[in-house]
Image (cartoon, rainbow, N blue to C red; front, top):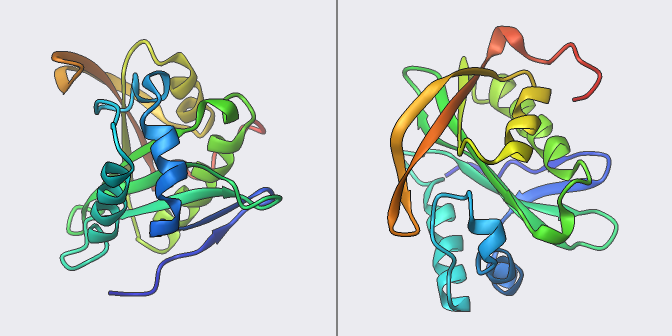
Amino acid sequence: MTSFPLLLTQRLVLRELVPDDAEALFDIHSDEQVMRWFGADPIATVDQAKQLIAMFADWRTPPASGTRWAIVRRADDQLLGTAGLFKWNRSWHNCVLGYELGRAYWSMGYMQEALHAMLDYGFSTMHLHRVQAEIHPDNAASIRVVQRLGFSYEGTHRQQGFWGQRFHDLQCFSLLASEWPPTSTDA
């Protein structure tokens, strides 16, 4: 396994999730509002957060299928959320983007800042050609984030997700290497 890719932005450090992050990750993943659009039900124990950390670490072992970063605020080392490039198909040069942010950190530009650094890494280091995001149609904030980063709407995947004891449609957005970086000043 290669060393974990540390990414730095003006306000953030994107680093490997470690066992010491379990309590903060539990606070995020046990919040029903945060998990409403995540694609999984809220977790109930810190042990489940530890299992998530182990699962994300497994993504980096061969055959590596992706990377999940802890999004940490530089000013106080606070874990704000996580984000990842996963389902990495190396031969097709594509992957899926996923992310979540603790509710206290919404609408502050943190996720857009983190995703910008991750996409730079994905296109330059992973040699991705395409990144896809699948977002619940009612998750307007997430849709705005990817659109500001240059993603284009492609269509709806009917009943693609299942959580909360029901199926959910997901809207598909994509970004190609030729479209990166975005020309808008919003990113």
